[in-house]
Image 1 (tube, helix red, strand yellow):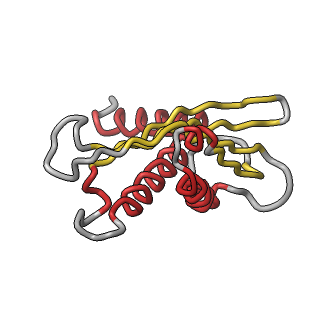
Image 2 (image 1 turned 180 degrees about the vertical axis):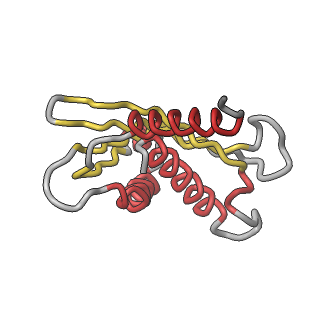
Length: 153
């Protein structure tokens, strides 16, 4: 007779194995970040800084050697509230939206829409002069974490 612990352990192992198999992504040889939509929204030089920060945050996904799929991330929008603290719901939250695509030799292998949402206070003290940059940095890191999670990395 199988006891409850053995049954749950067996099911858990099967679920974990299935998840690991389905979440496996091909090796990534290159990473490209497109901030064109941010440029059209008027983010200017900050869009370029967001591109570089996101590329740096995702660099660990690159596999050594030649070949592999290309990870292309298009940053489609950034929303920052003017209120920094104490709000509930969506008021007072910042968001960075992107779409991550794995592109192989035969086209798009996988597509992941990502929307990282953080409290406006996630960037730290609102009264310091670099608060907006710290809020953007926190959004970029959260977005990169979701992309890594989707890719199993």
